[in-house]
Image 1 (cartoon, rainbow, N blue to C red):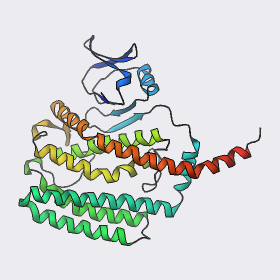
Image 2: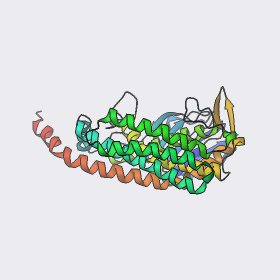
Image 3: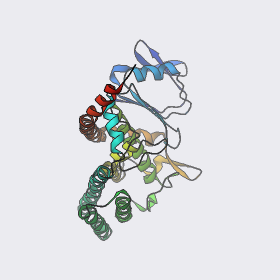
Image 4: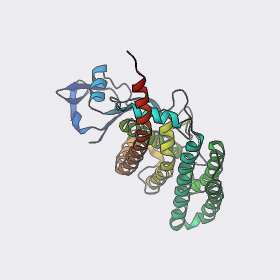
Amino acid sequence: MATLLLDRADLEVRIVDGALALYENGSRSQTVPLRLIERAIIQGARTRLDSSVLLKLAEAGVATLLLSPRAGRQVAIVLGPAHNDAAVRLAQARRTMDHDFCKAWARGLVTAKLRRQHRLLQHAETRRPDVRKSLFDARKGIDVALRQATDDQQADCPRLRGLEGSAARAYFHGYTALFAPELVFTGRNRRPPRDPVNACLSLAYTLLHFDAVRAAHGAGLDPLLGFYHRPAFGRESLACDLIEPLRPVADEWIWQQFSSGQLRPEHFGTDKGAYLLGKAGRGHFYAGWEKFAPLPRRWLRQRCAQLARQMRTEGEPWLEEFEDDEVF
């Protein structure tokens, strides 16, 4: 059990003999050894646990994501001990101020994302010939932005964000055509999501972001220090960077969930205009997600390990300079 989902109402969580013990109505319903858990997601209304549970999870290296019970919005992430190699973070911080590095990093992210958006729509044309025109037009719009992002080697981050935005407008023109009319999916919206598809997109991106934070933290990187998404108060900007190329991959998975009938309109409810996954819907969503997520997680681990190696090589000489200057 790599991921433990706690989404039942009135659930109490305790630590018993190196395991998480789950209690419902005063009776133990399940026991899960800590060594089997890589990540925990807590979304249940009135889920009760004390600080000792979070402490044991962190000590065991289990990252914990706290979601709002209804909307599935990230409230907090609790991580285990940080990597001890200061050279990595020192170089990472310096690179956030290196405009050439940030431009090259951003161009790689944006072009990878646009290529995957294009590939998704191209694949969809073979399955949905009835909406081929919308998909073809969307791909043409992405092609224009992708060509400009590839050809303009001097494009800075604001310019790349503009190209990413124009591609997104074209992309969602095609992507929305893939869903049934009763889902009322007309484009990307959030806070609150105003249709079932947007509710799933928001949750999927939140889960990808959580895995990106976990991968960065595990590699010794600082999740807050991004190169494309600039560092900002309270935002894990590096995680925002890392998930950009993965968004179209999640988009395709969500389309598959709806087209196969795994997710249906009756799996959703509304609360003050926001569409929310109900209990049955969450069960289908998370079960499918755990089958889908290993590949994106592996990509995140590999990408973070690669970046950390580069930062370590750059940062070790600087760290030695600090050590040489120490006077006690």
